[in-house]
Length: 200
Image (cartoon, rainbow, N blue to C red; front, side, top):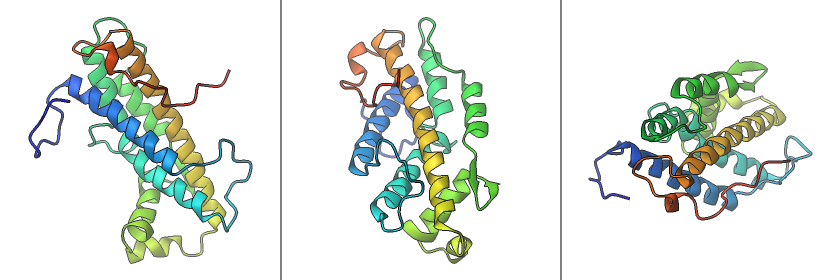
């Protein structure tokens, strides 16, 4: 990757933007391997004593935010697909930026506490009320809520977010492999399959 000043928040161009995305997804997969979940989870939520599974979901969800909730983040998927389309030398199979944004806003709603709440709010309750800080109000909002409601919400949302990320990553990587993105060499695509192959 091109060396950039430490103070630079944004990639200097679309090529670096796509590279940053591919690197970030690879790092997410490393994290997911470090915090594994069963390939198929027949019991939702995790048994009360299965703290490892509970916190694996929380850590994964927190790490997925930048891809699907962080509108100002460089690897927010609508930003990524916008950069890829601007680099496209020929047709690529990838949603438009506005389609991606609409899909995220309608397809990843989280059902929580019996109400529709913003996924960002739910995750902030964990991050700022429990995991990173102890914000009293956010922690109190979780008091009295049944554990299965929280964990089921996290499970469903994380699974859906990973599926969206998997799909977009495969599309972008395929465009790189096929040489369809200007300024990028096919060798820059992931050197190994980062995701299990799709069923069927």
